[in-house]
Image 1: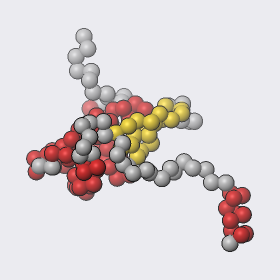
Image 2: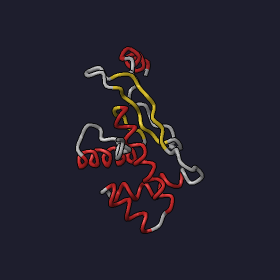
Image 3: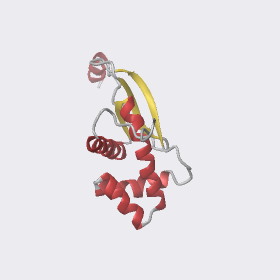
Image 4: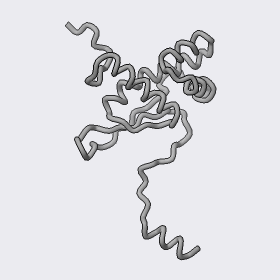
Length: 140
């Protein structure tokens, strides 16, 4: 029977899974985009979207539920004041998962988890040519 298999466990017990999802969603709120494994991104996505739905309600009860789930008041404040207004006209689908290639060390599938309506995030993975830096310094 397939009872109780709706929640992704991500290979851990319930308390560890809850802690991982809390951490991922808080970092998503803080940075706007996080790089993690595909399985963790897919598991964190419904949790993040549920938090945005609470933030869109904007009630005291919704704020208390978000604080209880995320355990970080500053991230809840940012969620309610910055992220929820960006998604006010959207009826769900607040996040996207962008698949990346496999991780070199263990070939785990990697992905970006990011907000859909967030302004563009600077890409940390841009490789800067060291020779171009030297040429700029010589010309300046």
